[in-house]
Amino acid sequence: MVGPSLSDDERDAASLRLKLFFVVLVGASGGLISLQVDPTPVELALSVLGGLLLGWVLLVFLVRSFREDPRR
View 1 (cartoon, rainbow, N blue to C red):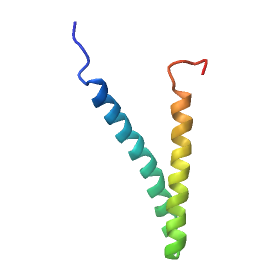
View 2: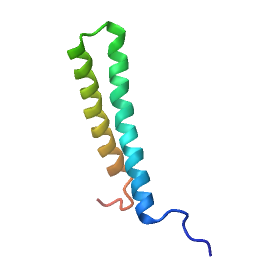
View 3: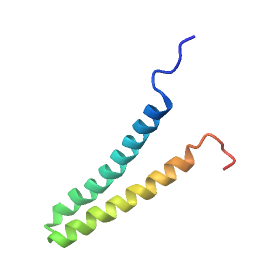
View 4: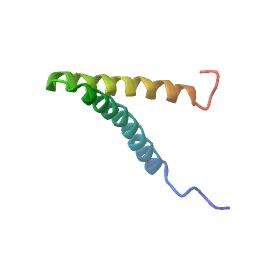
């Protein structure tokens, strides 16, 4: 029988990188959208921070939604 190609530590590290990429992608997306209205640097920073917060909230929702035990 063939075992998994990744160890548990490697799988955890890959999962963390994917989660961080998702959050950063949503945050950068907020910044890029705000660039369409010619924001000040403060407004741009706030939109990126808001996007990062939204990305984190979405990540928490997705992780809870796809948990293996449906009773939790």
